[in-house]
Image 1 (cartoon, rainbow, N blue to C red):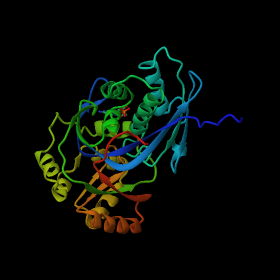
Image 2: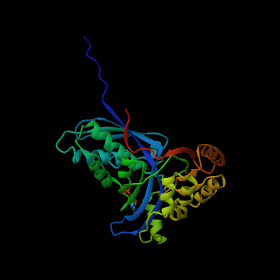
Image 3: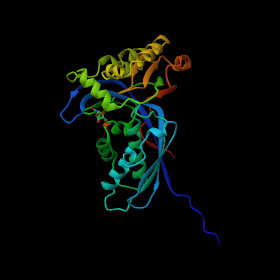
Image 4: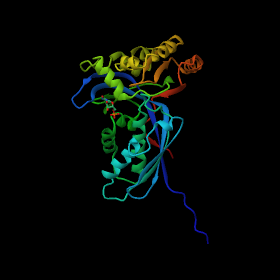
Length: 308
Ligand code: C5P
């Protein structure tokens, strides 16, 4: 009798990118980081991370998608670092290894936490693959060691981030928001944008979240949210990439109710009043030819989740 062929086990996790609805930053700290007050919203642009067994001590990654060539595939890959960290901590003493495959849709170095999303995806996928006894809180603490945005990528939704952006508290948000994302050619490195921010001495003492923004989220009021969007890193991103100012102006002229550079950029997030306004804006913005591509998404959406 023929031996049945069993497929190798693959655990697949889907993980969303984010936009920052508000990002306020203090000056550079002694550890090189900046103290932030930010509100994240996870949006429906997803990377997928697959994990399958490999020989003990072996960790590899393959990256697929339009911008795959921009992602390192060796030990410098943040998803590989995540799998190794998990194996060395929660999996210590067990013969663990993993082959990872990442399908990228979140722009690389685009200000939408694409790398952090892949780290979050790898943590969850490997924890399930290896059947580790680890709580969501422990997974989040490991995530914070990999990058400031990783805890949010695990959690998703809408959340207040303080500290380096890694201390999270939920934010009440009603309804769904319609975003049009403008992706730019080329990357904008987060340390370079923070470096410009420091050079321009833009860091201010810690400030809270504008109450108008929290009120807009509670009432599900897109135009009010649009008016309250703010990012202290935007001036630094524009100083490094002046052509982004044209994209911001174009989206606003074409009817966006809000416009902001996402995180350290160069992605720009335009808020539309409703779904049909978002369709209209994305078509018109695409035809302007000012950006690499335009994508419509909604938020908030959940964070890293198993795909069944
Ligand atoms: O934490 P993560 O590795 O994603 O951060 C990338 C870089 O962004 C850091 O090395 C630092 O230069 C900058 N950063 C910062 N302050 C933060 C978060 C990030 O200066 N709160």
